[in-house]
Length: 186
Image 1 (cartoon, rainbow, N blue to C red):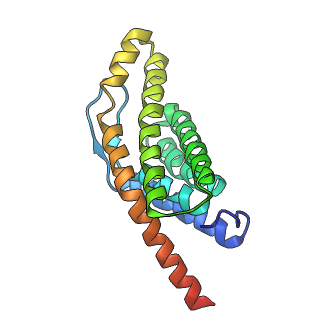
Image 2 (image 1 turned 60 degrees about the horizontal axis):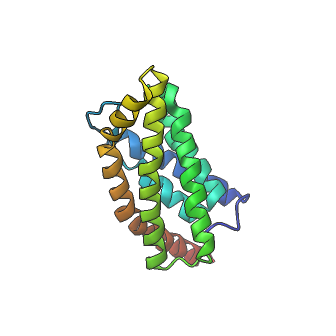
Image 3 (image 1 turned 45 degrees about the vertical axis):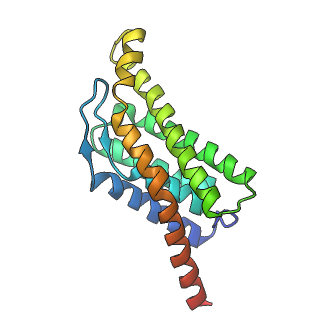
């Protein structure tokens, strides 16, 4: 939606707004899930990050995700692994932005749904790799890290399914509200 307006004051404000919403989306609804590696939990931060990337474009959406998810990790006891979260945001942003570009930035319901599903699947893989790295950081053997990380994926799978379902609804709702506001202003 705002892909071509990265440096406008409006884009900067919306980036900050999305960053705050992402942080709040993690902070407000956090349902911890027992895991062998890390302290995963169910939250809406990933869904909001994907929505930000789709709405604001790769750069500003990625910045919103880095600030929102990374900021949450830094301020809430996940400092040692915050870099992994931020790396995951970058990977997801690059993949769905590249696919969106391949779709010619046509934001049909079909394309946005495919992008949301792709983001969810990507997040499962990046979280698995991040969990392996996290396990290795605390001295776990490689084979044990592979297995333990696999059994630590339930929260990620729930978050990914939530992203695949909710991100398209959020994107089209925000797009409609944004268009309405623009019409009333102009």
